[in-house]
Length: 119
Image (cartoon, rainbow, N blue to C red; front, side, top):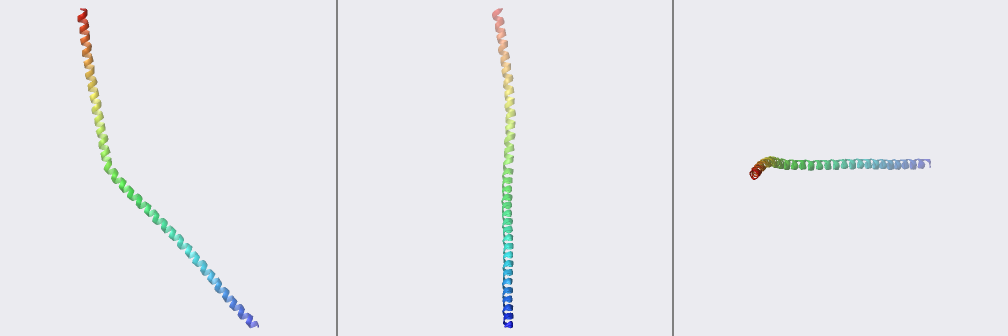
């Protein structure tokens, strides 16, 4: 009878060891699964960052290309406007000078006319 109890106890202990090993294996599998999920998340984040940086790089290239094409045109327009404003100011000065000369001539004619009518 003692031998039977001992055999049952040994069998029970072996069964418990198997269950403990299975539980440990399950914990290891869960831990490995969690690590794989973490690595996958980091990989997805890295791919997302690479994609965003690639899009940003492409955008910078396109904007740079457009700016290099438009900038000379804008500078040309600004230069043209500066030259036109200088010419416009020059025309205003010349017109003012002509108007002053004509006004002075009118004053001279009026003074001569007043002298003739008085004298």
